[in-house]
Structures are given as structure tokens and as C-alpha cells.
Length: 342
Image 1 (cartoon, one colour):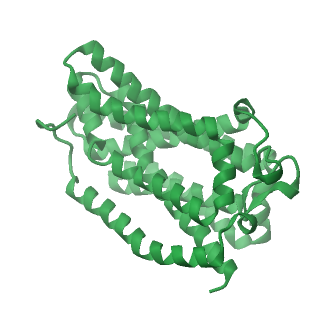
Image 2: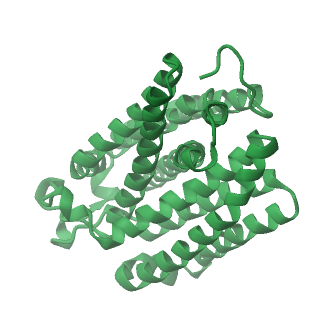
């Protein structure tokens, strides 16, 4: 197998891992964002949290696997991206830890004040983590101040300008919608109806931000459409994206929430695919000089390393997928509270 073919395969594998994480952790981040808005009493807060209780830690395995694969397959890209977002990743890890601690600690003390504190921590950590993922994506899309030796020469505040923040808002709205549809599948009664009433406003919020981000990306990031112009067949990606977005309200109207959840998952997958199409063949575009772009070619590991890792991936990825499928099958159905619940 040629070196370039191996490189492209690993670009696709890393993309699949990132899509898997975004879909799976996206809905439990969405649940965290929504739970103060829909849960009216302690029992409902517990139902909402326990809807993701058996799943959230397994979902984050995909992020860990993504980081490990990026480090091994494209070490220069790993070094450049992670050092560029050093402060942001510290904050992201703090949020992921904060979500876990909030889930585990909330029910340890039967005090309304104590539980309100952890409820707020769960909400804030979930919303901040979702926003940070979008802000990172917005910065990568627009380009960053990467200099010689793939070193980031900007600061945290340079990453917090209007375009990445707008992409972050889009990510929060998408995950909230994704989480609402998931909660509709997992709850029943009055709580389920309350969740149902939130889905339509969340869809319109997401659709509005989606249209705005699409337009400003076309204006602010002209290189994002270069691959689409060069390979017209790739227009199928944004077309499928738009169809998946429109299918969410259609599926809910037809009373098929499982189909709506599949559609919201496909929206995430299509957006991630569109992002990959927009940045390929770059990991990070330098705004300082084209000489400092981080590309697939200058970021990749040796041919031998990529080949050895491919065999490991052929064995390991089905294990990760089968674990995920098994957990979701075991904990299918409506969420119920018992003595082991949060």
C-alpha cells in the first residue's frame, strides 16, 4: 500500500473517531445543557442524569482514542493542535471532570442546596465543553497564527473572536437539540411532554445559527469551498447535510423520534464531513505564512508506523464499536430509578 494511500486512510479513521465522539458525547452534553430547563423537581433531575448515567464515560472513550490515533499517525499535527489550544484543552478537561464529579457527587448528600450546586456544575461544564469544541473547530477552519516548527504564536484571547464564538454557539445549539431528542426517547409522562415542547424552539435556534454560520463561513473563510469547487461531486456532502437538518422536524411530526435521533446524528456526521472537506489536506492553516501550514504530508508518521497502526486499528476499532453497541443495547428503553441510580 502506498504512503499517500495510508495517509489518507488514517485521515479518514481519525475523522470517524471524531464523528463517533461528537454523536455519542454530543447528546449527553446536550442533556447536561438542558437539564436545568426541563427538570422541575429532584426526581426529574435524577431521571435526566440517569438517562446518560451508564453511557457518558463510554462515550468519552472515542475522544481518548481520537487523541491517541492523532498522536501516533500525525505527531506534528498533534503537537501543533494541542499546543495551540493548550489553555482551551485544560478548560475542556476541567469541564469533562466537572461533569463526572457533578454526576457522582450530587446524590451523596440529601440537601437541596448541595444538589443545586452540582446541578449548576453539570450544566455549566456541559455547555462550556460543547462551546469549546465548536470554538476549536472555528479556529481550525479559519486558520491560526502557526509559525516555524509548527509553533502557535498567538494567545487564548486571539482564539476568542466572533467567528469561532459563533461556531461554538452553533455547536451548543446542535448538541442541545440532539440531547432533547435523546431525552424524548428515554423519558415518559409529563417530563417527556416538556422535553417535546423544547424540541421545536431548539430546532429553529439551530437552523437559524446553521444558516448564519454557513453564510459567514462562505464570506469569512473563502478557502473552505476550494475543494467543493475543484471536486463538484463533493457537493453531495452539504446537500445531505441540509436534508438531514430538514428531516428532524419531519420525523418528529410523523411521531418517529428514533428516526429524528438518527437524523440529528447524521447532521453531526455531515457537518463533521463538511469540516473535513473544507480543511483537507491541512490540519491547521497558518495565517502567518503558507510555509507554516500543517498538512497531512508534513505531519504524518513513517510508512511503517502507519501500516502497523492500521493492523491495530483493524483489530481495535471493532472492539470499541462492539463495546458501545453492547452498552446501548443493555441500557435500552425508558430510564428508571432504583437504589443504584444517581
